Image (cartoon, rainbow, N blue to C red):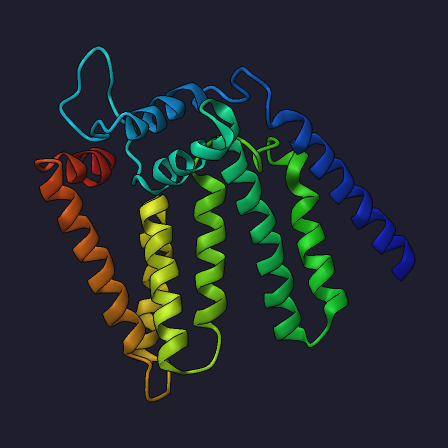
Length: 234
């Protein structure tokens, strides 16, 4: 039975990686927002502001901007187009599989169970809409969030607290959904967690997110908070 499970998991991974590699350089949209996401990346490359007054030529998404800058940074190697965007998503997906493996292996003490956990996530590629390699921010957000959880669940130490806070703050700047998902962790630190350094995580996370938002808001004349917070709230 164990051999059968492993063979099925390997087949899922083979299908995922083969499909993703074939789609990386596809010159047209794989999903209906990829083209608009590319416009954001091109604005970063051209040195234009992502957030500003909306007009007929460009209106930004209501997401935080980390993904656009990461994808733009890859264009020096890959060239412009959909390739760097999809490469960020695919590498993030691979990183997420590694984090799932490490997380479950640490919790269970079993590499086999870690392998199964990562493979089960791989098996969701098709039923999840073949999303793992699409040029959008979601996989980068998920990878950073899972990496932050990995350190949050680790030892009670200043390094673990800092790494968890930094990675979860980066997850927020990839997609602000991370803020709501991180709130229970902050409440846990405040009211339930034990340890000498339990308050370091919420303190560092709050400073990083607040400072980052303040800098971006001032740099964009208030448009960052308009798109990222005010529009979604409505």
